[in-house]
Image (cartoon, rainbow, N blue to C red; front, side, top):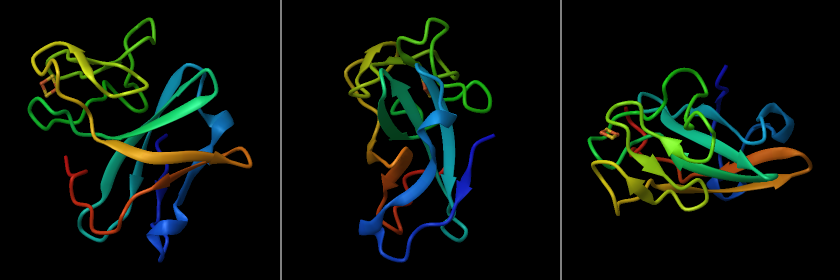
Length: 131
Ligand code: FES
């Protein structure tokens, strides 16, 4: 299940989303950062022990990308895939390499792994995560 977490008072501190071990390698996990009436929806992708984070908003038509809870990848887990119209994105860059928004990119969220925990850095008030 996608974790729902509270933002830090100081956005520079980042938000602890989950343990690195909670994400398959390769694999993906959605998350929601509560921000009053406007929660921010994002997702993590783990690949070779690196973690990448993006807003869960497709640049094609603004839909959420996932097929179901924590399902953001193609069947072979080599690319991110939007469930709405099938756009494919590189895991490490978020660049759309096939589909209706080829050349556009997902919005990246700064992330790091600290003591086995995945932390994301999102400015409070960022409303772009709306579904
Ligand atoms: S909304 Fe993602 S491919 Fe159309």
